[in-house]
Length: 484
Image (cartoon, rainbow, N blue to C red; front, side, top):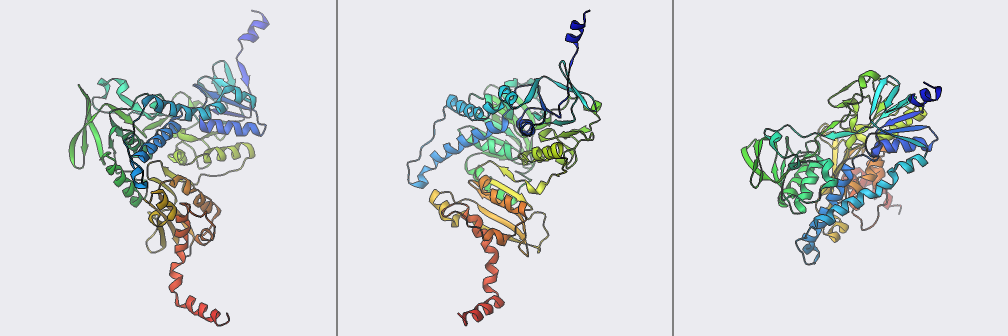
């Protein structure tokens, strides 16, 4: 064998500063940010760059459903209401257009122009500091695993006998070309609830089957407001229930549901398993790299470090201290890993510092301690309903409120907002909590006139309502008036 032939057959060895495994949203964000600082980056992805687009497709569907509901409820604004006619093909095109917005920035050609080496293939750890991808061996200074998660269909009696096309997951939403006539949604978290409502608004007959109560991780008062809306819009709620058996019928599927009120039957043409996901880490050979993992994902500490300190994990594949945080953390995971890898700064996860959003209508947005865990008598709850906000009345959307929780001295502990646009209205409260501002500082901010955010300002101002009846304050005002 000639030397040239031997060299040609020898696997290529890459030695970047950072190797990111997984080119979903967070993997791409980390890789592009590191490359912007001039760091040599290798990005590994076994499928197409950009990930599965599950969340964005769901959001596009939810927004389309909200528009459909506005047509139904136009009468409240003096317009002629009508039952919207959904065009399946156009709805599919709308979802694809939403996905196309991010697709341009995720193309391998653009990533290469940024200096990122993209390798397509399955990654396998071969040691504590090396990864094999096809013919490539990657020995990086640091690794970041952002491989994501895959949907997990619950084990149901009779499920194996069904046509696989009858059971959908959230990952199937971008490819959905026709709305189901009857839909059974399995799950009780924010994504399951928002999707169940969206399909009902678009014309499907929907049953939502929750293993526990609706949205157990959110404020009970806020959940009650949403529960009432779901029932008004025709969603059949089966809380604290499970599917005991499913079988084929001539007309579709028949689900036997067992709950606190006994057994019932739900008819459906399709089943959507929403919120059931598992970390997609089985093929990584993590044990060869000295990385611990369990059913929740790759075990990490609050700094997103694995048991191998050269390797971080972020996003939905991360378990341990990060388990469950990926849904609400936004780019927080990316920032923590980036600062650690590039600047050796040890930032930690702050579970209370990330907003928790349910994209239903009304939306539910909360951040910090919303009073469920605080000790009675040591907090103050300030609230202002949208029914008393002129902008909300002008829009005909007065459902919901802003609720802020403080200690007795006015230190801000947490906020819950229920209503249209809650996911946007929570933003200034996120800044206030991050900056350690008190409720007095929030009350002094000039909010836009005739905007829904006026509810936030009024809730903050209500902290001082008690002072108006204080004898000491009144004596002080009386004293100052004499010198007036």
